[in-house]
Image (cartoon, rainbow, N blue to C red; front, side):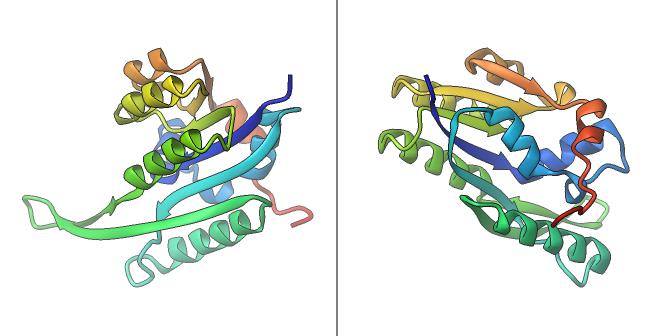
Length: 185
């Protein structure tokens, strides 16, 4: 039986996952569109939500430009909504500047939960290995929805793995297979 599928992508978690495979890997070079087509298969894709925060142009102009290309590519994917959250400046004990993303996890959780309550999907696919989402998955399952996850084995929380119906792990072979080369785009 065909299922209605919604995808929820924790963009920051995905970046760290790719870097765990190879420091040179970047989400800018991942073909989300074709990977999603593969994992959804014959089911009905109803929505894709991508959560992240825009990089600061003044901090790293090259990475900012690459991220903007990725966001533009994602926005061109039918049914894909890009949700940009805040990037907040922080400092280490050594007074080194760094940035954290604020609000992405709560936006993702609220969207997945609200869409389950509103019966907008039969199956949710969560692109994250973050154990903080284990409780969210329990609530979504209480609404008789199926939840799968896409993650990277080294970063996947045991608690989250135990809650989802199925895990799809991205390894180097898959990352290379879905390396975005820009053809026909």
